[in-house]
Amino acid sequence: MAKYFLGVDGGGTNCRIRLADENLTTLADAAGGRSNLQIERGEPAYRSIMDGTREVFQKAGLDFAETRNTFACFGMAGGRLPSARDEFAARAWPFAGVQVFDDIDIARAGAHGGDDGAVIIVGTGSAAMAMQNGVRHQCGGWGFHIGDQMSGAILGRELVRRSVDAADGLQSASPLTEAVIERLGGSVDAVMNWSFPKDPRPPLEAGNATATSTLLGRAPAEFGALIPLFFDFYEQGDPVAVELMAIELGYIDTYVRWFKARGVGRMAAVGGFGTRLYPLMMQRYGDFIVRPVHEPLHGAVILAKQIFSP
Image (cartoon, rainbow, N blue to C red):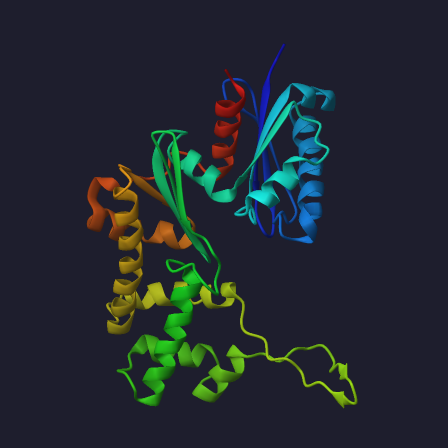
């Protein structure tokens, strides 16, 4: 009887599904919609995975009934809390077995081909995780408001703060700080307006008075969108960009020390920002830094086989 493995990389805006055979050869891939477990208690994620599963079996030329011989592993955004993972795994799945992980677990498995090692996610957000001698180590990943120190969103926010200070004359300006002010409206007043967009919803009645519109902060991705501009000026040697890059690498230093203290021997990075940092990290950390062997989606397939094969 044939055995199949299905992997899912479930993200906040989309989801990817891969079906593989017993040798982990990819049979088909599919894509679905948003898949964060914190959205509507995982209902959109469930629909996306089920729709994607039907699609990959159809593409692979297999009857959907073969799901009963298929073992699945999901790496899900919003899966940091064990309760969210357990609740999602308990849904009505057609598979022979299901294991739900945080998305960083499949990133780690893919980066090291299922072997021991660490991974940092450095994109709009950031997090860190390692497997070493059968022990799982995880830190970070607590979100924009209280964590994500390595992230593009945090660096972008610090870049805006630094640019406003420079415009006020509190710190030295540079072509980068001037470009940021220009990008966000051309003046500090405009930057302040940008940073607090007003709630587009109409005012609410509050007792006998009318509640004023709420000031909303910008989303992490909107700060992270400044990272390409940051790199343009960093590559030109802009002094403020160099200053902020040193802070960014200092955050990564903290995670590298944390991993090494736990006996971890190598670390990979994933995420758009992390990929761009590779030359600096390799120069800074030597052979402790390695390139990912596989993408996170294939890491999910690897974990499915490791968990469900004898």
